[in-house]
Length: 207
Image 1 (cartoon, rainbow, N blue to C red):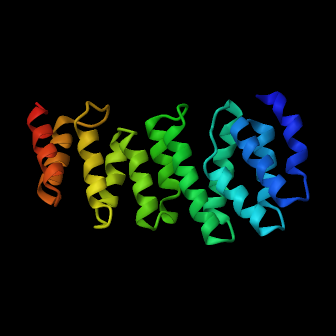
Image 2 (image 1 turned 60 degrees about the vertical axis):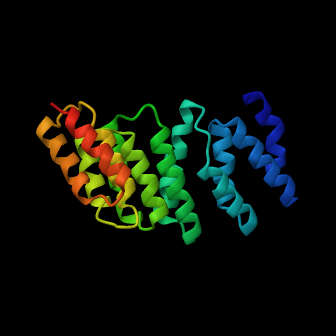
Image 3 (image 1 turned 45 degrees about the vertical axis):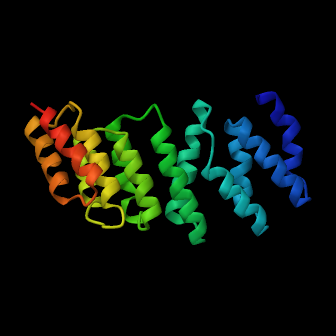
């Protein structure tokens, strides 16, 4: 637990790169604000291997503590303003995973956070992660955003699948007519037989 941090901190200050890495990985397992501060500091390191490893560690931050919410802000900064493209990608992936796993955020808040980074979500891999967040955040705004993702043929089927999952639920602010329309659209446009079948079956249950 937290008591370990005082023993691990010297490792993160070691000039030996290998020991430094070991210390950072151990701190990430412990989590908490002090551990997060050490990893954020390593991201500013002049040593490129240390910097790269710290970014990788932050992108899979465990989010065990209430204070670990600060990891979300650090990931957002990486996603939107890191100098290296590889760091931006890892930051974005980590941020989307952070949103998805954050139990304090409402569904609407999760969707709003995905919208905030929408312009940075360009590749199919990250789009799939964003779709996974939206699929777990049933709401009118999630359906709206999933519709825009469905316009990209590379991830359309994942978006359609998430839309079926959401439209099969009673959602505040989404009428049955709207849910039916979503399901009809998926049944018509999807090229995946299983998703088409699920859409039709779900549609028959919305009465």
